[in-house]
Image: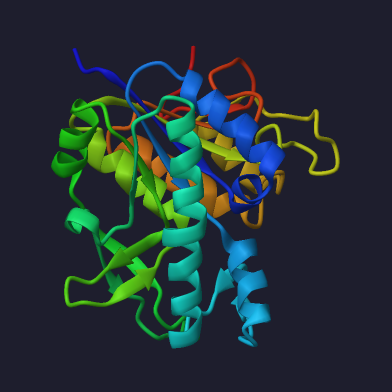
Amino acid sequence: MKENLTIVKVGGKIVEEEASLQKLLEEFTAVEGPKVLIHGGGRTATALAAKMGIETRMVDGRRITDEDMLRVVTMVYAGLVNKNVVAKLQSLGVKALGLTGADMDVIRSHRRPVKEIDYGFVGDVDNVDGEALSVLIDRNFVPVMAPLTHDGKGQLLNTNADTIAGEVAKALASYYQVTLIYCFEKKGVLANPDDDDSVIPLITPQKYESLKEQQVIQGGMIPKLDNSFAALRAGVDKVIITRVGQIGKDGGTTILNYEVQ
């Protein structure tokens, strides 16, 4: 029987505020068994870019990454945010190891093709080396992954952290029984975005289609759930969308790839 593995993807706002970061890391440390943490850091990147006189351009919530912005996100994601998280986890007794996709050639991507929009140095994932990650995990290291990948030809690429979480979960599903947790500011997927207590506790494929038809689920939550179901189809055991304070506890939204009788 495969060992349980927990992958936690945490939004930038949580890792960029001291109180929420500390709470998140204490919860993450308390998760039993092998685990992986994947983080963002967009607000810090935007703030540093402004100090450097570099304009931040976003399209539908996606960052346009030109050469100057790539330097900024590399400094912030792989440096400031990643190493701050790693250091704090070490203080909690966690054998954390900070990684980008370029480290150990663990995540290869290609530069996103130009269609209506040129996103610049943004990567779409081609391959995750699950075996390399599993070797680290089996030696009790805890990978802490920044949202940067590379193309194998020397080019770093800014890559969506939600996507990295889903692709890493898929790659590790061959080696472990994987639970993927998306941790953000809300309690879960909400039936009413204005009511924080309107959490939908369980979403299955049939329910998902129904919620989309009713426009209960729309906008930015659709790609997050599409990624979740893609991970489940690839062998991930379950996906949970929740907030800090609920990791490893009841609550949040559980996503399963089968109907519950």
